[in-house]
Image 1 (tube, one colour):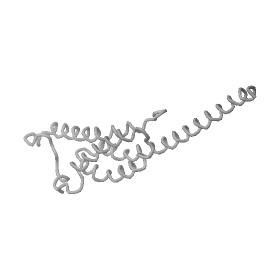
Image 2 (image 1 turned 180 degrees about the vertical axis):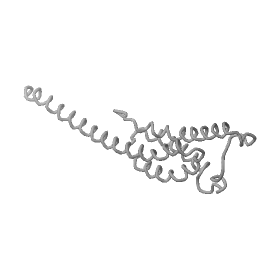
Image 3 (image 1 turned 180 degrees about the horizontal axis):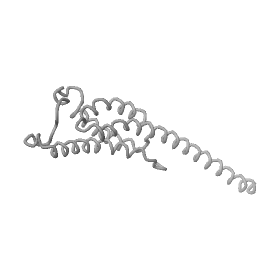
Image 4 (image 1 turned 90 degrees about the vertical axis):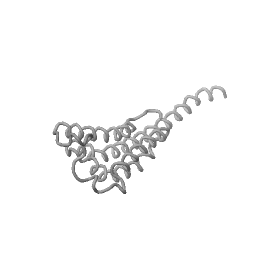
Length: 154
């Protein structure tokens, strides 16, 4: 009887380990696919921030609904990292609501936005302001994209 147990124990352990690893890798595949979709939802906004100088509010207004839809799907694949992602998402959503969300005056989308009104005619200051607002927006997007990296045993 002990001989049978000694022979079968490695077989059962191998089967158990195979089952666990197979499930883990299937979950990783699903995560990788969802992460790719989530990242790609931000591509247009990131490209536009780099090419449409001074239009970060309009870009946020246009792209946020796409980001929200991608977030809803991606969030379900985060496991233990969901709380950290939710915190980063709330910060991004608050930034969107402040800068371009519902109730934002239409006047905010018209004309030029600068950091110092006294320098509003200075092309260098305009460029610096545009770069500041672009980076500020990216600083709210990038923490979300960090969650798309695979954590092997999360």
